[in-house]
Length: 171
Image 1: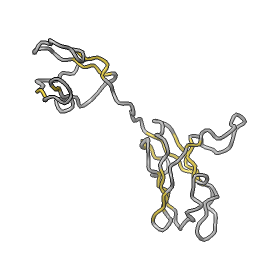
Image 2: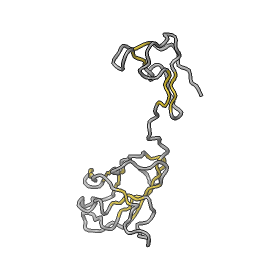
Image 3: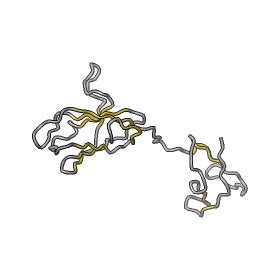
Image 4: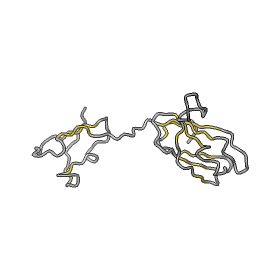
């Protein structure tokens, strides 16, 4: 990803490219730091740097010039993150990396799936008219609702599929 990238995934693969090989033992969770704050300095309120986020293992490729990692947990939407590279990272030549950082901002991704909060007739109803209009109401606005995404079965979810004549969007 480029520095200052926007609309980044909530579970991004962060790839760091170096112009010369890095000692892989020095690019680790203490020298590659993911944070929500633009600085690694502790404030008087900080007992620890609570803004630091755990990262998964760091992998190396391309002759130790490319290092990749993902956050251990899903990131928050619409949030700016910083990746700090400390001078604890050394090149195979023995020189230390000059401390640097990059940043990116996650996109506005809805990670909560919509749920049905009203169904008419209710689940398990009996003696239902064959001409009833079945109604579904979701907890949020939904898209792509059609006879491929809403499937009606006889008896239970393992029963035969029933053809749906039409689906109409409501309020």
